[in-house]
Length: 251
Image 1 (cartoon, rainbow, N blue to C red):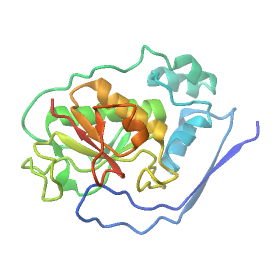
Image 2 (image 1 turned 30 degrees about the vertical axis):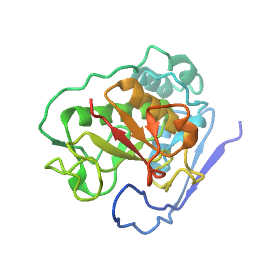
Image 3 (image 1 turned 90 degrees about the vertical axis):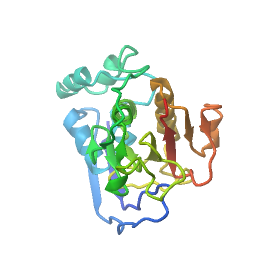
Image 4 (image 1 turned 135 degrees about the vertical axis):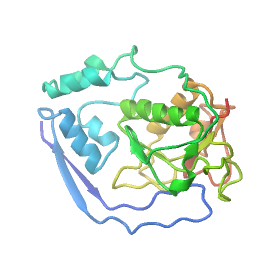
């Protein structure tokens, strides 16, 4: 099979529901990576997601988003053994991680880490404080979304260390409300909003479904009308929410 070449050029800046922001200069570095049927190992996918990220790294190995989750340890073993495309079909089953998530409880605010499995952060560090259950839920959401789609989530504001909104929002009190940038961002491609060609509606639907399935969320504010129709009464419209999801984890 002819090798597919992935060429990622340039970048913009992430946006969030903030009063103001400082945008970094665009990244003009050009990187390329070849992936084919015979070379579809974990290290190759990792190199791809590090260089450009996102769903394209997985689709080049024959993996498409679905409502099923992958047992990552078993999947990685298969890929490292040069199992190729068949690994995804064999090991992405319904018995993997999904459903209701029960987080630890507590009232003392904790700081959310700058990065981790399936997530990175953007915006100011002093707005990354959340309740223990919120922190645990974000981490769990990132794992589920990344395992299913190959796309990281980019986490923005939660609350400040006093549980306030830092004067940047009308909400975000108490460390239970979070912002997540629109799906489609990678280390080199930054999606501004749902109107950009880089926006991934399929990955966005996965994120919203998992937020709902995990439990604890009362609502999500997000302005993609196609997805609002799929989650009536749960995903709602709010001015300024074309560029991010505002998740209310009030329960």
